[in-house]
Length: 181
Image (cartoon, rainbow, N blue to C red; front, side, top):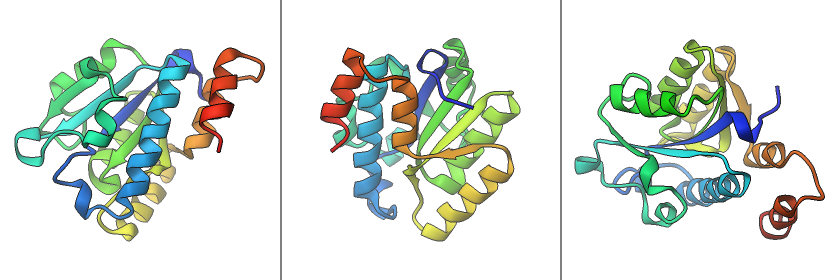
């Protein structure tokens, strides 16, 4: 199944100030997520951002805040976005058939959110180079488990090219000039 910009959304899960320093390859996680959020904007894809108990874990890291829409933020206490009533309502309000997930931790909030979205009969895509955990083994096992649950494991470039759909457009020109280095 291909990912289409008019039927998908990008869900950024819990990339927060107090959690990021402990996460494996956190600089790559932030850079790759920023890249994908910028491409989502270029493609006109809605972006939602969850924050797990921000009073204790801090807000989304500063390096991402300027590319994430302010009206897309959701606070939560449940690990899964879909178990939290306000997050579930906000995600369902835009009615995405396809949800592309990035964030942390892969084996906790990302995993639980992805599985519950799949249970809601959504096409779920987890971006392998835009998720992480404190322990790389936890990330690897989470990706394996998600794959066994029928969740698609993709890369940021796969998503970007599928959102672009074709060359020869002004969006693709900007994509190729600014995001394919």
